Length: 129
Image 1 (tube, one colour):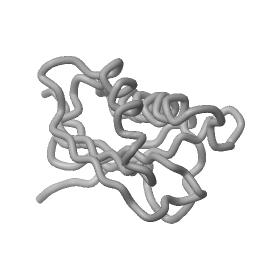
Image 2: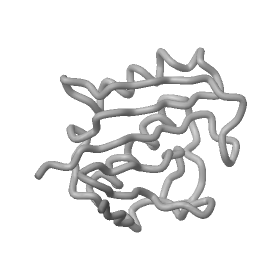
Image 3: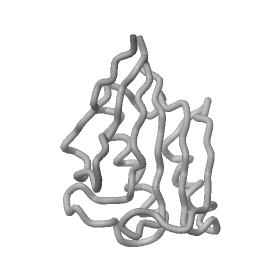
Image 4: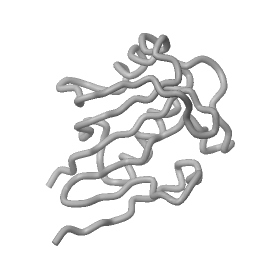
């Protein structure tokens, strides 16, 4: 029987709905989508799409640490953008956070994201034994 453990850190902004920051189950950690919210202010990160991509990935790093993982433990990412034309800038930032072998990844343009964000990134970690 599988277990389901909640992962929580106060290094992330408060949830904007009834969900967990991440759930650990059967050796995997499934992180909720991370918006580019600065946990220090509770506000969406201002600046360029690159600035907001950095913030979303910084938030992912915080949930990784809370789960006892690193970014190298990520096996799958999904990037949601409200404008696919931002992909090149986001891809350049993304490359600063990951090493080979890179996680599998999907990227989508979506009509809208919560709180008016223009980027959201979700990940799946594989925990080391």
